[in-house]
Image (tube, rainbow, N blue to C red; front, top):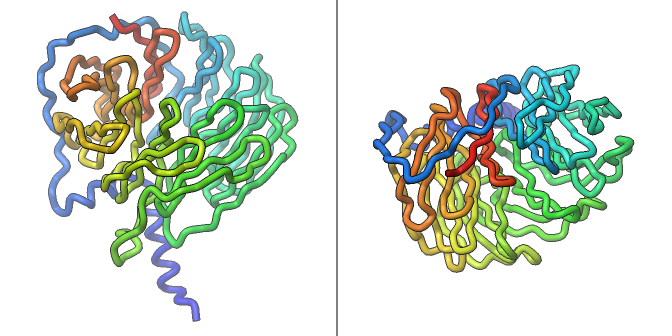
Length: 384
């Protein structure tokens, strides 16, 4: 006989966990207070000079990423403001008002831009900002759409992946994952590789590759396995977007492991015990991640040997990392962007973007660094 009390308790726990992932991370420290580390003074070894900035509207407590396609940046706000911005000048090309609130940023290929409302309705716009179609997926969506290969890919919270024709909105395919007993109620990042496949994480410590054309599963592999006795202890979802450099792809799970493997097959080359919900970034030789304490760590890409660990940003709730050139960039909850040396983790530079959290990874494109904060400031910086 089903234990309905236990099911209800698990459902309630899942809602609480999903509301604030950071709160879960704080619990892992027991009764210790998560006091953000004081910033260590740094003499900037290079500058991130402001090129332009604009406001796209607040994302509230959600994690909004801008999308880049061609020479434009597409961004959105929680209240449903959707904009296309000229990347070099920061001028708004067009602005559209989505009929409902959003909990995630847009996806775009430069021809079709898609957003999903908090009620699970997908709205698509052409590249003049004109709405072209909308459809309901019948479930909450917390993962940003991917638009690639003429397909808009939506990942629903009920573990369905749905591919829609980018021009007409006609449903092309559906891929259904099995529901887990308990999983984090958060967005699961999707990494598009060309116009052929996406790579994404799953609950239960697994990640995999899905074909864009038909939704077929190309491969999946575990990076970690549930351990512990309680449902909370056994949570080890791969929620953050995997990263890729050359033929090597890396992923990290919450309360699990970080690992890297071959992009074509998914076969892991190595894995290490580690826990993160902010994901990985890669250089040709290293993979970077930060744990729940905001310790930033670099591992050797070839075998997983820990190369360095920087603890100067402890409990500052650093966001998703981004590796560019010889530096690693991360934002924090107070609106700072920190630049660390990829070679040894030394703090090289710091700027204040604004006073609101920066959870989305900066974007490096066309010689610019793009940063969007939860407060809605989107800015381009030029490394000098």
